[in-house]
Image (cartoon, rainbow, N blue to C red; front, side, top):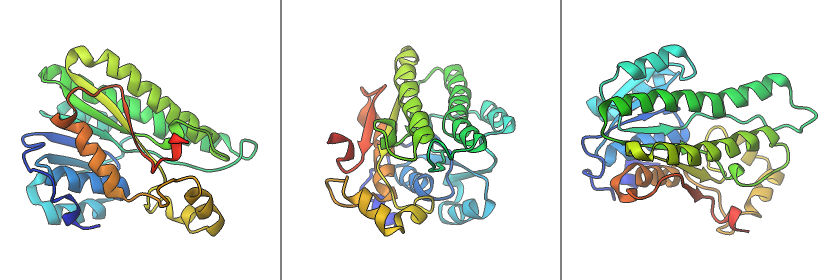
Length: 253
């Protein structure tokens, strides 16, 4: 992916906006950083690996505000509370440990519940408090999954957490509407990222995936980032409590 992927944006689409993006060092999160900066935003990029953020900083200068932090920590929530302006939150944290129900350990269960749902809730709550204090509204975009709308073998807990993200998105879309804060989600199919590479490199699993995507291919990170820019911007000003599926038609069947 190159920066040219996002040159179609007007750089005023998100001008004067500050977006907080978690999981920003790689994959979908990194693509969101690039897309939001090309759309005119300043970006607080959150990742645990300093070198990932150093590379982004070298390209985007002062438009990129690097936070080398663990987004599951209380210190991260405190830093959110101290920041003077967060207009957009992209909740991009998540993990998957594909195993059968009988093989899944309690440790794997707790890891997915904590990162995919509990941390997303805690970060959202901290950002909403900041938005409420400024009283100018805002936009929250949760990176969910098509697995939040269907079931699939060896993904019982992942599906459960992503269904939870969809429920939270709907509930907060209603609850926060009077504050002018919109809450939406994106449900991608399998996207080419470092996390999915080991799965998609398995020929049998790769064919399983392709057989279920009517468009006949897996997704690219910029396709999810494009959806995030739309949901974060005034282009979707009447949209809240909704999900934008970027799944090549998987869930339409």
